[in-house]
Amino acid sequence: MLVPFSSLPSHARVWIYQSSRVFSAIEKEEISAGLNTFLSNWATHGTPLNTAFEIRYNQFIVIGLDEEVKGASGCSIDASVHMVQSLEMKYKLELLDKMNVCYRTADQICYTPLKEFRKLAKTPKVTPDTIVFNNLVVDKAEYESHWEVPAYDSWHARFIK
View 1 (cartoon, helix red, strand yellow):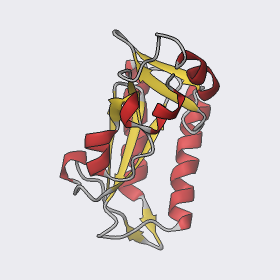
View 2 (cartoon, helix red, strand yellow; view 1 turned 60 degrees about the vertical axis):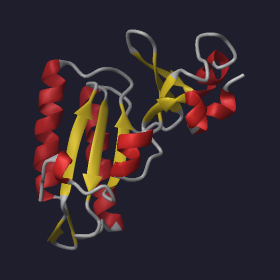
View 3 (cartoon, helix red, strand yellow; view 1 turned 90 degrees about the vertical axis):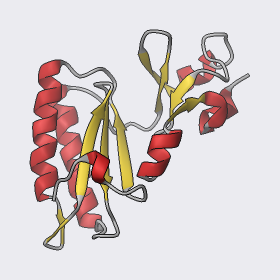
């Protein structure tokens, strides 16, 4: 069952997929429609899941699941990954590559390979105060409080000079 993201409890599990580029307005509309369809029918062993999603900054897909109602099985998680893979293919973008980092500059969100981020972290372009996106958060509470944070307050800190 698809619910508004705001109605998910703070303990709801989240998955964050960062895109290698910003979605166009048409892509965002189509991706939202596809997520609506998929999540409205997402189930585990025939039991509907209590789910939600949001698209942040036209570049991040955030899927939430209230596991207290019903948790996802391996097969249902596989189905969600296949859905995300289909978005990658259809729109020619990366969503599943965890070896990339997003961080904020004054006027944009930058997407860069982790190897390049490590190099940038040794320059004034990325500092301890640079806002990074910590996609390793596991639940809605962490997402709301520790997803968009200064690098010094994230796993990214290990790369800062």
